[in-house]
Image (cartoon, rainbow, N blue to C red; front, side, top):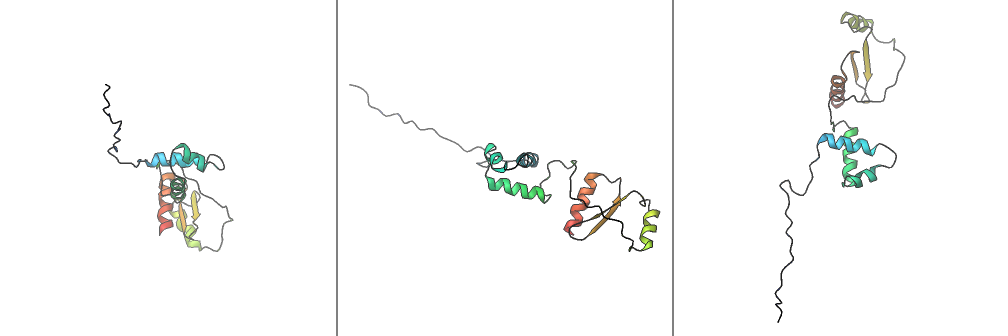
Length: 139
């Protein structure tokens, strides 16, 4: 007689210490977002390649556009710039004050979409300027 005992074929899957969710660093998120912008219609393919949902990638892209997702703070950031002729309606005291401060010739004037104006020295570091723009935009 043969032995008809049943041996169960059960495999136990355990959840890792971090849980089911993967943890992405900001640098990884920025890299994935940049990859999704590499060519037209790459968002869905990029999401599949990294096994994330398209809605998550869309959220990361929105955060990156708003400046809330920064992987490397020292990287240069680009924004749309329009060069306009100098306005002569400004008071002369402002120009004299800029010359007295040493910013007369080497100054940069940035008018933000919210209408605020930022005037700074042309030698200001890009990381400092990016932080200043974020603060002035939120104000």
